Length: 284
Ligand code: HH2
Image (cartoon, rainbow, N blue to C red; front, side):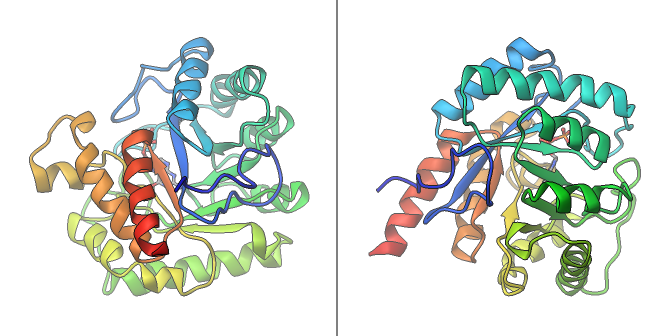
């Protein structure tokens, strides 16, 4: 079977939820992202990489103009929009109808990207980074990813502490979903994300993955972003992020088993094929 195909390439509209797993291909237009910084910096290389991700089977492209790797510094809002908006336009010119998500916590960047044709906002601050963001996504009626993060990227990996990471992340996401809905966001447009690696030790990441059902039970679609992240390298010994594809695939499949339906990945083909197999098994 093919991983779902309906409702995904429409460009705009409701969240890309399929009968099967949905893949967001990662496109970082930054000089400093942890695994691919500088590679797709500039509109032309970024657009051709997006085309490659689509050819590999991505259902949406998630464009980020600011690295959120541990220790990273923010860029100015103007610089972020300058990086992202031409890439949104370029992808839609090359592949009209592509579903584009923009990884930003700034309403100005989000608004400019939506004007250029983006369809989804991926906010790693769960609408907490900019007081205008909730109103914007409510008004534009677009799907929004609400991600959990403890602290901020500059310092988030300095000794993160939880009494019960799964309970605290679940309570945080439930509260953020409620806040978004109170601000006018359609509940059907809310997607939740545990924020793997964002203010979490390896044990925290593993506990969240192991008990992902607890987040799925909140009743919103769950997106998981483990792709090439450091905790995988700690387990397998793969220091080069690009060599962490097998570990990433393992987490995608087990997250799917626990009810996640959206996967933010660099290596689209590997994750797509593994998830197609997992979906076929489920359908037997
Ligand atoms: N992870 C990263 C960035 N954005 N968004 C969501 N919703 N979930 C994630 O897990 C997530 C995210 C970090 O990965 P990457 O984009 O590859 O690196 P960088 O932040 O260095 O650009």
